[in-house]
Image (cartoon, rainbow, N blue to C red; front, side):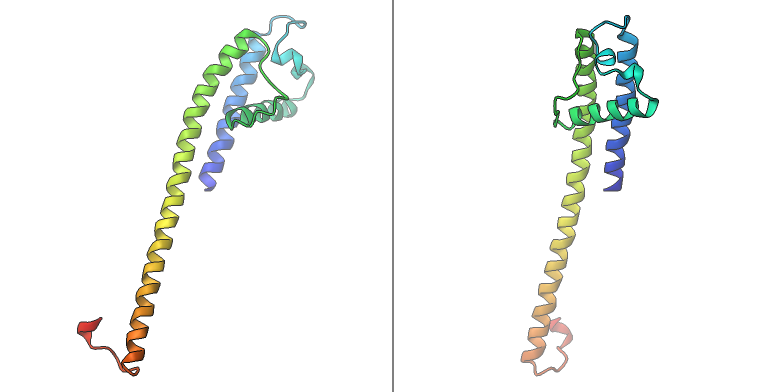
Length: 139
């Protein structure tokens, strides 16, 4: 489970950093209508930039998409399309891993339930055998 959470955070960090670099490189003038200019990333500290773009990428990839941040120019929309394709593939892999963990836990629980039923059955047999040990061929 820890590995899955770590994978999501790392994916969001790297795609967010990629998004920041790409939007900064595609912004040519200070008055251009782009993500970088619209949300004032040039005026923020590195940590504020990082938190903004990681938040944007995480909400976008997880399909929450609150709408508070979005690509502004045609170039950014095109770039976001490719980032989303990468993100969907990675999130699909992460969800497959999560489902396999759940199935493994479920199979372990089912095996424990069956062994508990068998133990109960053996105790019931001992009870009807007046608490004498059961013959080996009955176990």
